[in-house]
Length: 309
Ligand code: 13P
Ligand code: SF4
Image (tube, rainbow, N blue to C red; front, side, top):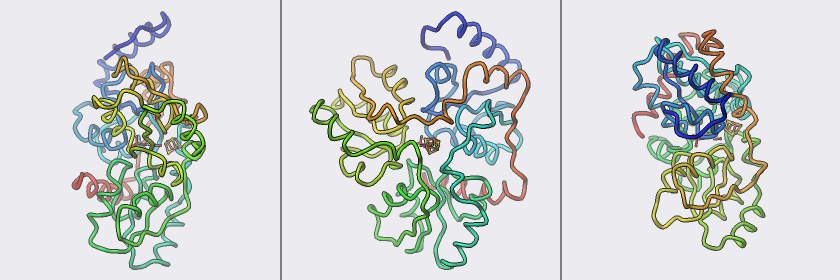
């Protein structure tokens, strides 16, 4: 659904995309960090959890995934009969590439008694080596659901650390991190709190612990969207990638949203443009696929997660 005014060029692109989308029986799934004009053509905008759930529910033939590679891969894992398009094949997540399946197999040998929880920001091959997946929205719940007190959490050390503060379980952390969220500094939050004393500070659990310690709330991007709807929240300091500001402002006119840092940009998320979405639907590429043996093992980990959300 198109919901904002656009330039003439964008209007032409959007018209073509919507026409072709219908012809291809495609659905456009868009992450909260995408460019505003890409969010505006979505059938669904959401966080990793919402997007995974949505992928399982759609009856389209084609998913155009406007996000990064692991997200499109998750859709391919969950929907093997559908064609999954990622409009720019270079849109990867550096954190997801901070652990390989080989490295994980080695670590599992060192920690034979640990249950492996993998953040959804990981490759299909890593998911296939894991016992259960999680997203930023349900990491604590997933960890708590496990019938074992020893956990190996990969690849995000900060989400894993955040989960460890909410449970008594022993969590071994893999040293991965998000290069965008580590740019958010405690002094950014402190200064904005001084300047906006009525504002609530909400941060993503990929932020460093010293940033999380200063927040009023910690949430996934979907959790931030829901938090902003509360009547007692009129001003919000937003500690995550700045693409989310578009949706927050659009859905909450009259409220004030303050990005915590103009540096918090994920360049990979910004690779997807309207032009590339159109091209991708025209050419039906780049397609994201997962080898069947890997897909089945990875699906088991993602299904286990989806069963406990
Ligand atoms: P969410 O699932 O909270 O949207 O996070 C995805 C992500 O990549 C955060 O950097
Ligand atoms: Fe990956 Fe960070 Fe970009 Fe999210 S914001 S996709 S974790 S690099």
